[in-house]
Image 1 (cartoon, rainbow, N blue to C red):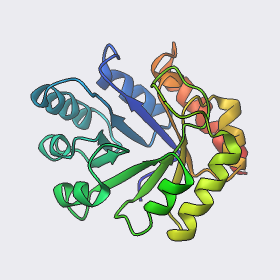
Image 2: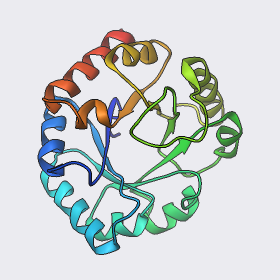
Image 3: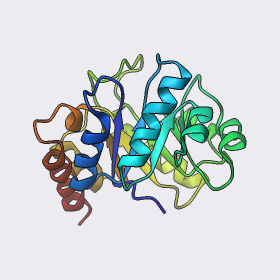
Image 4: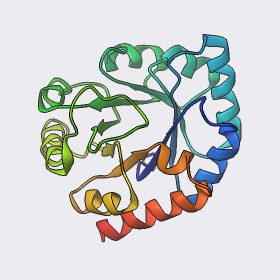
Length: 208
């Protein structure tokens, strides 16, 4: 099973994505997601191939299952308005990773039976990395949604996303999060590897 404990989401705003991903993986990131909502298919395939060739951890592609297959990525992550998990699974195949973003209890209920390998729940806190039309759900909301997901799929890895710092990572681990997904906490850090290591230490502290 992939290591979902520390999950990095990154995109074309990063100056040197492969180098940053390598540093983050050295610091403890266990999975990397490439998220680019504007580039053309060829550019996305090239970017993802570069990541796949650089890092020793699984690389996923946001939404674009076709890009994931063409670039040799480990799988795809989908959310509201993207392919459904079943559609994504048809494209990437039975052995690839398929992840799903869940914002609410209603979406958690709708995920029952979906062919997913993990769920990303949020946004938990305010974030400047991505526009979220819904208000933050907070740790209490995360706990409720995670419980509903696990009721339908016992053992499903559930990770938290949005606005997560080391202090919040510790609290989320204490609340039962299997992992955290971050963007700017690593991509904007002076030392991405150390930032990743600090987040992972916080998760491990909270889970202890």
